[in-house]
Image (cartoon, rainbow, N blue to C red):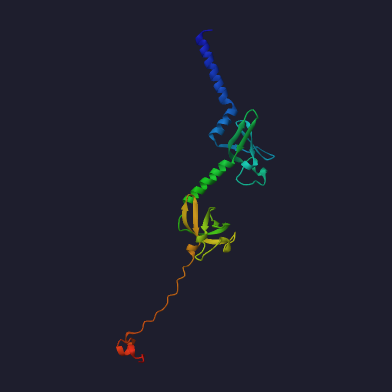
Length: 224
């Protein structure tokens, strides 16, 4: 066989092997994992501890903890549901493909929160609910799903030692947005309290005609 034919055969075999590698579904899912590719899938089955979805013809397992951001009461509610997942583990030798929707949901939630915070306007007055109490302040749940902190110094014009002395979890309170920094919202209740003016002492100034200026007036009550 000529050298030219051998080179062509070698090239053909290399192309075949490259094509075979590209066509191998496990290589595809591994590339999805490396690139953190978002994959739309349909939940095709519910098993103990999770759900099943197919990726490139491979049976993938989605643990229940990776299906949602919160605990799922009824896994069956996810059957035939369309969701987005990422590959988080792919092992051809073990025939193991693990998928997750949780990371994608967390990223979407973070983006939505950032968008809502970007629209927050300083000076806005809202009604919120006391969510948690700490020694340094109270966290307030706002109507749009955001949370903000009322520092203990911003609870009242009166000196407050601990937030729990005047607030309880679940209380509805009026708050004013006084700052937004690094994704954190600062609130004030004190800013909405009416400022009580100190009573002004009334000073009566005698009329000029009643003021004596003569030496006689100055010494009339002095007995020598």
